[in-house]
Length: 137
Image (cartoon, rainbow, N blue to C red; front, side, top):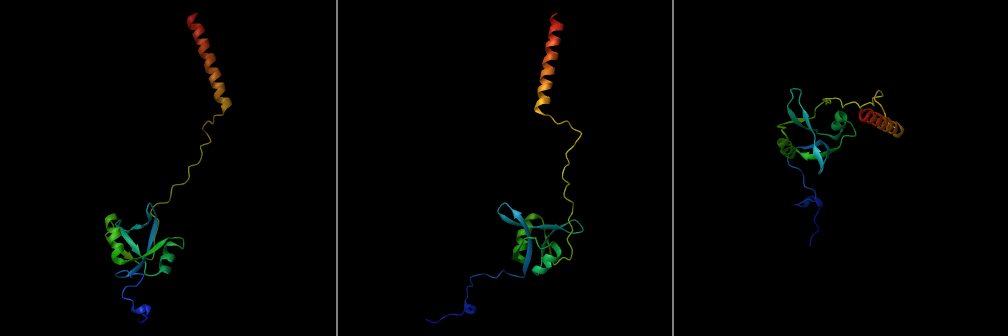
């Protein structure tokens, strides 16, 4: 038997993706992660990929999760989501809408304590007894 070199293996352990390999931004999803879909300046939906990890980090930040996908695989994942175009190496990404500000507690509303509720019950019962005594004579 002859020893085979790793480079001679006709079926490598890690398959190489078909086409150009891109670093693709993802977001958490119910089944693991999902490809992020972006909008073009004209409002169309587009998938985004980066040729380098550094490019992805410069545009989207170091905390952006990513996966490596071949271009055909990215197109196949994005098409059912309505993204028929693919943008490679965008220089800028801007959030569409600022997240809503946390709601502040309205300090003008009444806050009920158990003592206040008990006082209302007692006062209501006294008013009812007074009304019945006037009505019954």
